[in-house]
Length: 175
Ligand code: FES
Image (cartoon, rainbow, N blue to C red; front, side, top):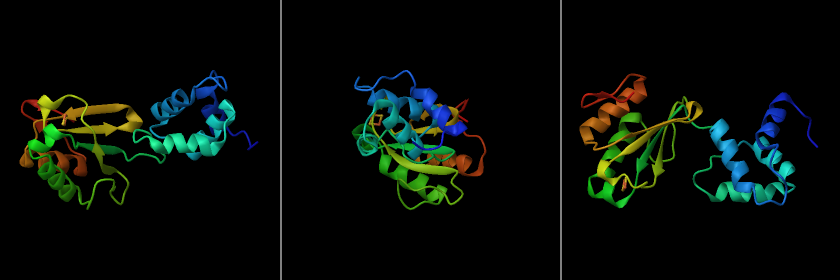
């Protein structure tokens, strides 16, 4: 068994009450993701030990689902909605404007300083807000929807995120 560091003991505490052979793999993955914003290699090992499973099995489950991250997230994630209602409202144009403003070529990339990433997102049923993105700060457990974007407001939003400023949408300061 690997050395029990303070960090590993903290990971172990997150899943300490989960019993092996009790179908708790998803619960364990969810807890780690919620607590740290991603599931590290060490967290996968701790889950495998706690649930008495092969690490490869735990990794396989974690990597199968898009919502689980296996590497530390950027400080800010722009999650672009790729759903049909958003696409009907120029979501592709919004995506291209955001990527160009942030200075990225494609979804899934992050800035060189690791501060901002733009990723693919799925419709969560708030289509009246189309076209929309979610601005996430995983380490702060913050997630805000920004909807009814135009190319111009998407560029202003992306500039504010890129430059660490604030973004005004209508009368509301979104961040
Ligand atoms: S399609 Fe984008 S929120 Fe539903």
